[in-house]
Length: 255
Image (cartoon, rainbow, N blue to C red; front, side, top):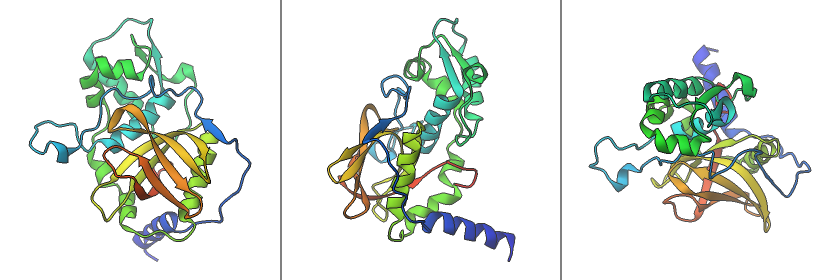
């Protein structure tokens, strides 16, 4: 079998196959310790090109970059409000140092993290140094052409979405942020990412609390309907309430 065929088979297996859902004892609600929507998210949004198609230099189509960046700051950066501020170029270099870490790597201990001086948290930093943060984060091109994005066009087998939920709850219960690819393809409305940071039981299902890079003002929500074993975009920016498919993103070098 050729190397290309092996890689294709691995991707297909990862995207479409599923194991029996693991029914583990978990708390009815959990959130990632130390993570605050008000403090630990970007102050600026990813813009939607369709809303302003003629605007120049619009910060649009960066949702994957921002979702990954949020996790990288949470895992690899440390803010020190008491330290003196530096200039924009130095802040840009430090953001690049944060973004150089793969998001699937384990968090660094405080002494080994990239220090962001002069600010207490990501929200304050990205509000005051928006240009430096945007320049320091990775470019969007490779996120748009990432080989796993094709999953949005594929049907999923029975049980797949329940397995995804199980994995997400395991990660959240263990205190780790989870980046999700969300889509209602073939509708052109939603091919997007959000980052889950908590969950709670909701009727017969589960509600995931998410940060949406398109909406810095308030948390979003994605609900899993246990009866139909599918996800519902119950509060995702500029998206009608309705069924979606969900996949995990950037949790290994392959996916």
